[in-house]
Image 1 (tube, rainbow, N blue to C red):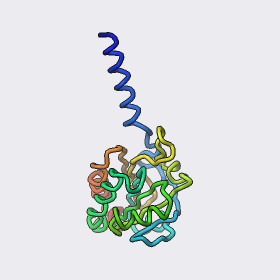
Image 2: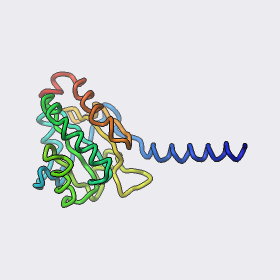
Image 3: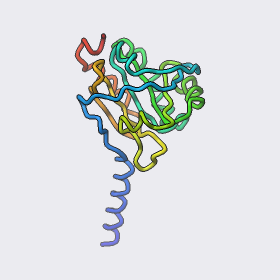
Length: 184
């Protein structure tokens, strides 16, 4: 019996380590690092600027581990399906991963349905700046989403490796922004 209890505790500790791989260092109200990065939209590459996007309204910045993985494709598809709702609220969406721009160019068409851009952060400077580096697999970004208000501060964040609730939570957070922030 003691061995069984010890085994259960070890399994629970292992599961907790897998599901809680990092903590969001940027809390609500914290300023975010402004970044520029190579990005792709509809298979075409361009230079994305968070500062320029924030000048137009709130931005959802979501980090994901790897383009073309099952869960990342599910999440990208869900953001693509909801993009009109974000746009109606004056918000834009940008996905960020450590994938190279060539991979993300294809992903922007296939999974993002050419509806929103995805940015390449091969050096992981943006990922680290938002504390989105997966601690157990440091070559990957964690699944972490932020709503950034036009003033450049975190309005909301959500972290979970399961992609199912990210879009819903980000949409609700954008809806909850003061009207001057949500529709600038």
